[in-house]
Image (cartoon, rainbow, N blue to C red; front, top):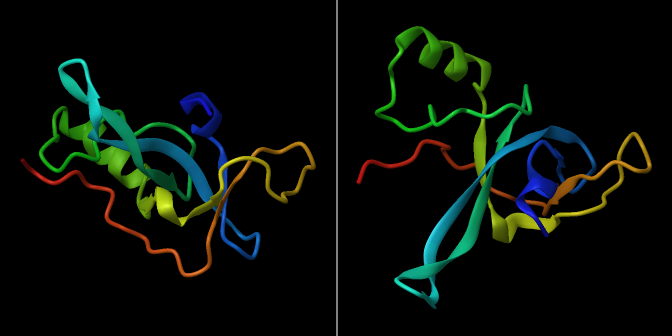
Length: 120
């Protein structure tokens, strides 16, 4: 699977209800060594209920400049949540309004995590 397969894909819960769109992914570097760094692993997906566009990095807690753009993007993405990759049941084809629609399906009882990146 490619990252481009996930970005802007609709997200549905286990009952088929629309939850939003994948706007970004979270990776962690905790895999086996791959040269100098550890190999990346997909940790989770950022799901926005209103739009499929990116946060442009403004989900980070300390990014607030230019202020007008930061405020607008945070307002546009209100309700965005992080869902762990372990809560994804089907990252490919799931029932949707159109037969050919690619969708991400979450397992029942998934948890919505805060999308903000913690400060180091």
